[in-house]
Each structure stands twice: as C-alpha cells, then as structure tokens.
Amino acid sequence: MDAPLHTCCNCKQLKQLTEFKLRMKDDRHGKKGEPTSKCTECTIRSQISRQKLKRKHDNDDAEEPMDLCNNDLPENQRKG
Image (tube, rainbow, N blue to C red; front, side):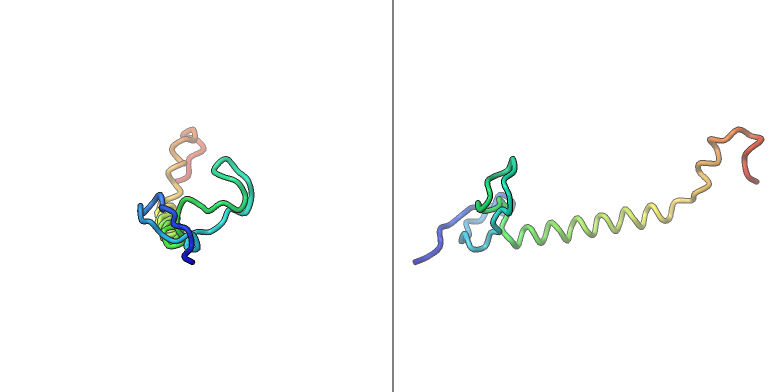
C-alpha cells in the first residue's frame, strides 16, 4: 500500500509522507513524530541557500576596513 500523501509548504507539491523528516521533539510547530512542513528536498535547498548567504555576509564583513571606528575617537586619540 502507498504511503499517505502530504503537501510541502514550500514547493506546494503533494508528496509521499516518506519524503518528509519527522519532528525530533515537541515544539510550537508540531509534536514529536509528526512530519515537518517542508519536504526533505526543500529543506536541503533552504539550508544550502542559507549557507551561501552566510558566506556572502562573512565575505562582505571581511572586506570592510577596520579604520571606520577611528572617526568615533576624539581628535587627540585618532591614529594617523
């Protein structure tokens, strides 16, 4: 017999329940053992997207010059 179908809140596709992770603990989103709202494929896609965005922000932060804070100091304490 086929597994029950469940709709992914992200891609809106009807998929088999086996394509969803089960919750590991009770929280405000659902009880332990219930399927998550996103299918495994969408969950992985979201994780990759967040990692790329984090890497981009980390690279942007690394490129900022650190002397910007120098302007906050009184004139007699400024470097250069």
